[in-house]
Image 1 (cartoon, rainbow, N blue to C red):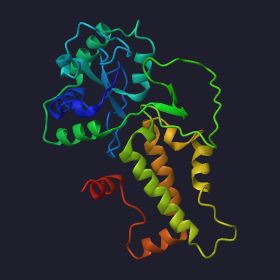
Image 2: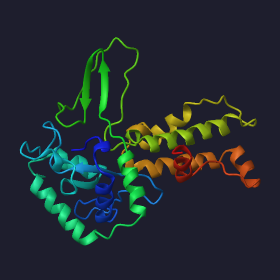
Image 3: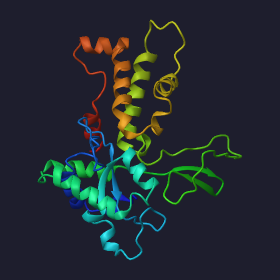
Image 4: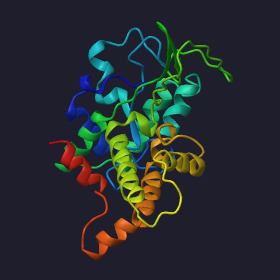
Length: 265
C-alpha cells in the first residue's frame, strides 16, 4: 500500500496532512499522525496499490495517479494493517469514501508548518521484515507475502538479521536514532556510577525494555514510541549523574526535537 516516499511530492503530502487534521482517517480513530513530541506515528498509504502485489491494485490506473492526492490517505499503523489485511472488505471505493468523509470533518487550510510535518512523513522509512538465508529472502508483513502462523528458519549463519516491519519503531530512522541516543546516555550515566555494587551490563537496558513492553523496542508499533521514550528518560533521570547534572543546571539528555535538529544539519 505504501511506496518509496522519494517519488511522492512534498506538496501532495503537505495538503494530505492538512486535510487529515493530524488524525488517522479510519472512522472514530483519534490516533494522531504526528505526536505532539514530533514523533511520526502515522503512515502514508495508497488506496489503490502501486504494485501489482499490493492490495487493491488497479492495472488500469495511470502511473501519474498512483501518487496523487486522491490515491493517498494517512492512517495510523494499526488501521493501515487492518485495511490491508482484508482488501475485499476495505476495497478502493470504501477507502476513498472514508478519506472523503474524514477530510470534510477534519480538514483545514494548509499552513507553512505543514511543510515540516510533510517532510517528516516523507522521511519515514518503512522496510519489510526480511530474514535472509544465503540468497533467499523471507518477507513477513509485506504485500504479496506468504502468510503463516509459524515460521521455521534454518540457516548456517550464527544469527538472523531482522528488519523492523512497516509501522514499527525500528522502521523510522529518526525515531530509532533518538531511542539509541537515550540508551547510550543511560549506559554512559549508569555505567559510570561509582556507588554501583553489582557489575554493570550495557545490554541490560534493552532487556529491561523488552520485559516491560513484551518485545524488542524496534519491533513495537510506532504509537508505542512515546512510552518507550518516556521510560528511558525516566531511567536516565534517576541515575546519579543525571541528578548531579540537574543540580548544575545541565540537561541529562536531548529532547526528540533537539536531537532531530542537530542531526538534520
